[in-house]
Length: 173
Image 1 (cartoon, one colour):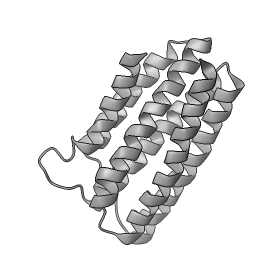
Image 2 (cartoon, one colour; image 1 turned 60 degrees about the vertical axis):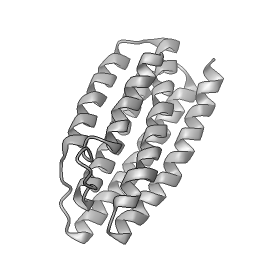
Image 3 (cartoon, helix red, strand yellow; image 1 turned 45 degrees about the vertical axis):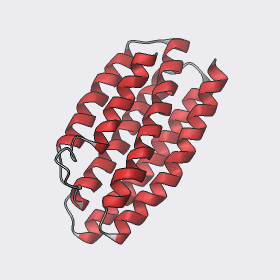
């Protein structure tokens, strides 16, 4: 389980390093793409959990994640259209997508309570890492006030997700 957690944390720590490795802060189009990609990753994980989880509480959590992340991603798409900004794919978003696909494949091999615990543990780690990246990298680097505001709203929601995931994890022990 600790290997799974460390993979999730390592993947999200890339938010603070891969695109920023050369010390340059990400641009707003890059930030928009990173944030959107992080949302898609959690939507995909949630959809897998909706079909694989055995616990009603885990299934309900997954449904909440899919609904909330889809709503935030819709707001993000609406904002970039309004601002006439094209999200820019970058090394961070590409690496996140690849590692997320690997994680989904790994989780897909598990069943029952083992799946439930691994999925929720990954969600705790993932939200911790995303929240940290939002606080320390993405929000401070965002130039556009509307993008910054959307990221701040997302951070509050995702902090709630982390607490919810931690609660579900404690109930599965």
